[in-house]
Length: 495
Image (cartoon, rainbow, N blue to C red; front, side, top):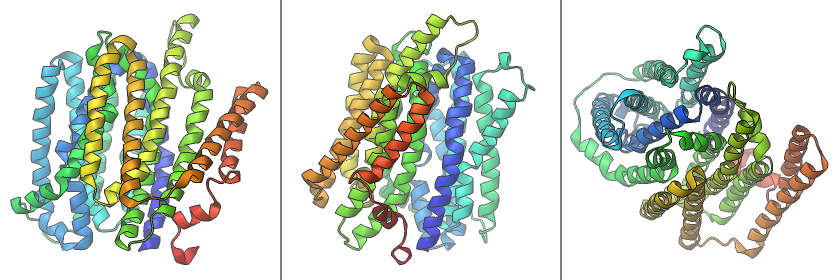
């Protein structure tokens, strides 16, 4: 079982590293290049608005269902029909909530209303994909689940590649609704595929809703559902606030989204780290194993990865933005450089947020494995309050830069608070020398990156060499040892 889990994690990481960065940096970036900052910024604000209420579509059903089926596969046949009906009712509730609040927020007519409809529909379809996957995960069908984790994105990439680059569709007529409808088609196909897999393992269907079972789900899952809601607010509310607080047609939300794109790509990868750590922390807590070494090793690995990305993005911020975003049609060079400068100013702040958020995938995951949801919810609630109050102050004055500064501040505060809770709760003994090693490593990365960029005039070559040297630094400084990575990934009998 352990070996199957490890193989699944590796397969899952491989597929997600292959597909999701291409979606974000290839397809999504090209869509924004075609639409411009204002149109894309309006879409992103509405998309993030629809995402804020995503938890209403789930209420903890997915995690609870996966755990129950893993413990007793007969639960699949017993509750699948009833839970599916509940999911449909939650989808209706979600639709009512987002349209009522959306109407009150100004998304009441024209393109904005259409965007809200398609974004909301896609969130409902995505929730069904994840619900069906929870049944597959509970049945321990690891390979099928890994394929399904990227199946919708692969289909959407194929559709959008045809739309963007085949020449069959006039680029001048392209609009954001095509982008959303391509995702809708991909989600529908994924639901059909997942449903076929699930139905093969169901003996009989009963569509009677078991309200006692649903109450049990809510009782156990509401703290986690609240945590997801609060984290969604303080992590994704900036584009919505930029679009609502500024009368610029979504332009500053578009600027923010350009800089946010690499944050999103990096976060998708860092988030997979939590998938691997959660069962390890849970097993260690259950068996009363000393946690300090596991925490150190996992934190070292994620600090090394996120630290190198952060430093490289700071030093090459202008070059990265120039590489990712090209002049618009008939755009003057001076206007283009001003626009790139805006992106480059916001970009390092958001990558700093990415670094802070990545560390929460260690300490936040440890608290989750321990069931310390009260503490996590208090930290997340503080993050929401700080985020909204600061953004109301800084966005009208500093625009997207203010929103990025708020994001960095909130992610740092929540990450530090989670670390302090873990240190006291689990009596972690990290020590001064441990933090000194972290500082030495990050300082070495900064120094090497600066020297390489100063000495090598060819930017592409200097970036490649600097990145390789920084990777070597991971193992030459006393931060991460190969043996520690092996013990983190492989089971004991394979070391």
